[in-house]
Image 1 (tube, each protein chain N blue to C red):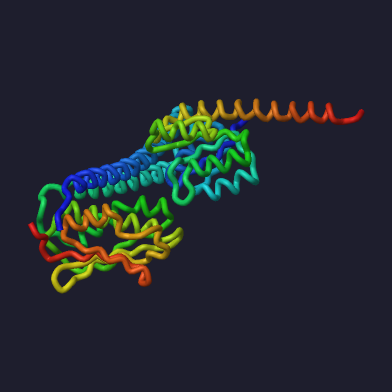
Image 2 (image 1 turned 180 degrees about the vertical axis):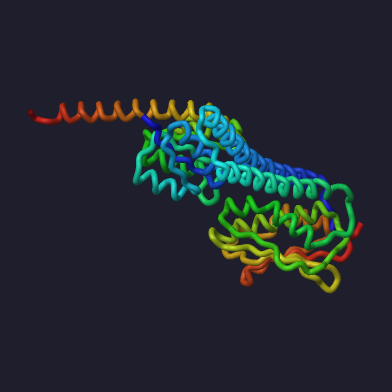
Amino acid sequence: MAEKVLLVDDETDFLDALSQRMEARGMNVSTSSNAAEALKRVQDETFDAIVLDLQMPGMDGLEALKMIKKENPELQIILLTGHATVEKGIEAMKLGAMDFVEKPSDIETLTEKIKKAQAKKMVLVEKRTEEKMKEILANKAW
Amino acid sequence: MEKDWEKLAFEGLAFFGRMSASVSHEIKNVMAVINENAGLVEDLALLADRGAALDPERLKRTAAAIQKQIRRGDGIVKNMNAFAHSVDEPVRRVSLDETLGLMVALSQRFAATRCVTLSAGEPAGVSVVTNPYFLENCIHLCLAFALDSAGSGKAITAVAESEEDGGRIRFSGIEAPTGPFPSQTALEVARAIDARLEFNQTGKTLVIILPAKIQG
C-alpha cells in the first residue's frame, strides 16, 4: 500500500522537488509550507508519516511536533533539520519524534524511515483497535 | 567612559558565532534544494534509461530551480565574506548605508522565523569613522530587540540618516517591547564605538547615534 506522507517545510522549492521524487517512489505525498497549515491538515486527514522541518517561521518544528503528538499520538513524525545537534535530537525524541534526518538528506534513507514509520503506525493502530474490541467485549452484556 | 574589552571580546565572539550559525543554516537549506533537484534529474535519467520519454520543459524547470539556489547561495556567501572582512581594520571610514544593508540582509532569517518583514530605508549617503565590527554588533543587538518586539506579521524598517556631527541609524516599528532597552550588553557595545542608544517607546523607535569619528 502506498505510504501517505505529509511534507512540511517553509522552503517551497525543496517541497516541490522532494515531493516529486517521493511520488516517483510510489508514495502519496501532500505538502504544507508552514506548521499551522500542517496542523489543520492533520485534523482532517490521516497520514502514515509526517516529515517536518525543525526551523520554520512562526511555529517551529518542535512546537508543531508537541501539538501533533498531543492530538494524534500514533502519528509518526520524522524531523528534518539543517543542524542536527544532540540536544535537539534528544528533545525531539522525548517529545515523541520517530526519527531525525539531517539536510541535505538521502532519498533512500528517508524512504526507508518512512516505510518504518508506516509499519510502526499500523502496529499502533492495530493494537488500539484490539484494545477497543476487548473493551467492547468486556462491557457488553450479550 | 571606560570600555570593558574583556566583555566586548566575549560579546564580539558570541556575535560572530550567532551570525555564522545563521548563515550555515541558510547554506544547508540551499544545498538541500540543490540536492533534491539534482536527485530529480537523476530520477528522470533512470526513467529515460528504462524507455520513458524525457520532458525538456521539466528539465528546464529543474535547471532553473538549481540556478536560482546557486544565486541565493552566492548572495549568502558574499554577505558572509563582507561580514568576515569587517574585522580587517579596527577603525576606518564606514558607509552607514552599506553596513546597515549588510546587517539587514544577514538578519533576514531572524526576521523570517519571527514572521516579521525587515527592510532598509533609502540610502542617505552618510559615513562615519568607526570600528566596523562593533558597529555591526550594535546594529545586530538593536535589530534583535526590534524584531522580538515587532509582533508577528508586522514590519521593522531601519534607515541611516545624517546627524549634525556624525550619523544615526533609526529602527521603527517596535510595537510591543519585550523588555527594557538597552541591555547591559548593548550599552557596552555602543560604548565601544562612542555611540548613544535612544529608545522612544511612544514613538516605537530605537536610534543609534554615532559620532563622525570614534575616539581612540
